[in-house]
Length: 120
Image 1 (spheres, rainbow, N blue to C red):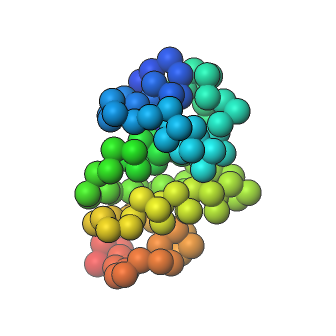
Image 2: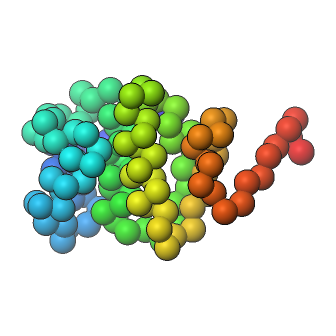
């Protein structure tokens, strides 16, 4: 997983795709993602799992109708995995979400699961 972040602080990062996002929405999203204390840190200095949480927060705030998640929980520690899954569940409401995952816990709430074995 290689999550790309672009700006100098988390508030700017979350406002990047949707200029109309209010500061309260940003703070709420950072709190959900367990990153509020890092609000003014440079996103480029965050760890892999933290960057993934910011990318998911951007998608939620963008309100994209189609989301593709590739190994969305791969870089996160088990203690915070439930926070990320809550965010993904929130992101999924009323949207088309395609998730690529190795862990069954990541896709347990899916409407349909397709299993590939040796490319089939």
